[in-house]
Length: 40
Image (cartoon, rainbow, N blue to C red; front, side, top):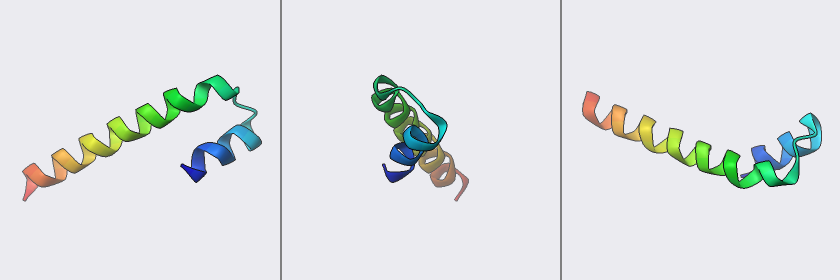
């Protein structure tokens, strides 16, 4: 979450991109967890 706020401040990302970035982050996090669980 903090990373998104930093991106908005540093990269001048518009405010309305925030929910999209959070959603993509959660999706990637879920994918990584699923893949690592299958690997074991």
